[in-house]
Length: 104
Image (cartoon, rainbow, N blue to C red):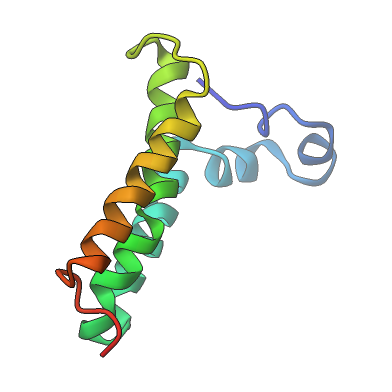
């Protein structure tokens, strides 16, 4: 199943079908996502936990949105906001308890 970008007017006009299938595919999205995740290991080891917790709310919000679109979870009003608020709460609680090696 292709996404909306695959059938967009700009893509159809500027990329041939071979390039479209390479750049707009499930493999390319997974590959680029993995490359972004692996870039965490370029950072200093003491900052890795901080950066991982910094992107956690957005990652959970994206996972919630994907599960909601596929029908894995029921509709909850303001569900994405609830997930983001909860993950931010966990992040700040861990920071307050100094479990995360931040501010060093």
